[in-house]
Image (cartoon, rainbow, N blue to C red):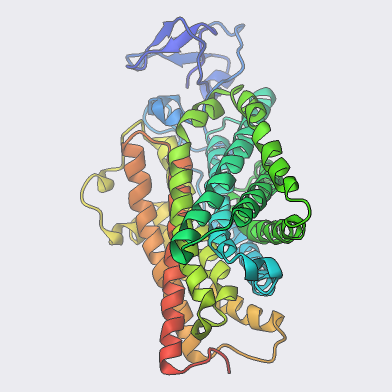
Amino acid sequence: MVVPESHNDKLSPNGSVGRGTIPQYGSYPSASQHSGSPQRFISNGSISTISPSIHHDPEYTETDFLLPSQLYGRSTLSRSTSAKDAGGSVPPAESLRSMLLQILVPFLLAGLGTICAGMLLEVVQSWDVFQEITELFILVPAVLGMKGNLEMTLASRLSTAVNAGKMQSTREKWMLIMGNLALKQLQATVLGLLASLMATVLGWMAEGQMPLHHIMLLCSASVSTTFFASLLQGIIMVGVILGSMRMGINPDNVATPMAASFGDLITLALLACFSQWFFSLIELYPYVLYLVDMLFLCLIPLWVVISSKHPASQLLLHTGWEPIITAMIISSIGGLILDKAVSDPNLAGIIVYAPVINGIGGNLVSIQASRISTNLHLNYSHEEVPEDRKGCFSPCRTFFGSGANHQCAQVLLLLVIPGQIVFLHAIHFLKGGHTLPSALFTVAFLSASLIQVFCLLCIADCMVHFLWRQGKDPDSYSIPYLTALGDLLGTVLLSLAFVLLWYVGDSGIV
């Protein structure tokens, strides 16, 4: 493990220690250091001893994949495991039963949250504002997708930091948390504005016109929703991560699905309420909409200053925009498809199932992406990937092998059918319990869900390793892409399922 010589040391490209700048990276004492013999690695891989009287707070950034594998700390969940090679950590050892139990509870909670979101969307679609400004349906997947763009990436980054043993210093931990929360508020504000503009453009292309007051309502409702939803869910997410640390639970298994458990419901409720409120003001007090937009835009410099205080969030401040903006565009395309499906009377009822299939697919694939990313951070240096990932990609490698992530992929795929059956019947129970999903509808819905999750898990396996090889942090890049693709795939497959049911004359219920 590495202990910086002084705050004026820096790492040279070849891994040696030089002088001149404040280091961004640090680590925690290894077992030998605890025994009273502090050591450090030098550039040739040998170990030298430093004075035990020197102590520095550990410093690191979430781009620690740029460091050699020797520099990673031990997992807080697996202190007794042997380090790999010259001091690298290995992922926490987990039994299949432990992994399943840790995944199952947040998976069911996330499913309950998406069910509630779907039922809420079915209710609010009849509100005046949704009937008058149908572009809100284009906005829905993009805004709900913020959990993948922001909350899940935050959860994945913090989970990696926990498993690498890098959240032990109280000062460093809270600097990291505050910097990431400020960055997330900045990203939420910008993405909310961009999502509303994207919905405006797509709505104009579809309808041929877009009144100015509709544009302002979309902007105000989107920015307000993303800001408050991001703030509330970010605080909850930090609590989940810290709670996982205290309880000895692998945060990779619980953090990302917990981030989405009631995220859809909270976000959709805020969007519906803000939209209806602004719609009631649009005739008498239109200036309120302009003031709301200006208020949130004026807070941007504050978030920039706070997020610049920590090297990790400062780096993401410059490099973290590509995946979340691209993901927002992909989700908006899915929203356009949903808008067309909702307006088609032959596809009646699709609206309640869209958040379920999209949310569950995104939740499951985010677990796998987070676990693979943590494994790469702990065991492989920059641009180094496992031997079986250096050749051509094969879907069989995703599900069959000896590693824990292969088992996790199998567990996640096997959860789809029983989980979606439970969620389907829960929807009908909550709607009154007088109907049951028809056999053909059940088969069509489960097939769509299974195809979606299978494709997402294969894409995640390929994408995370590809990003790592390209020198990009998968924690920040992969999950936005994957959840957005989940929204698009889920909406397309669900629409095809409903078209099939309409074609054969099945109402979907018995």
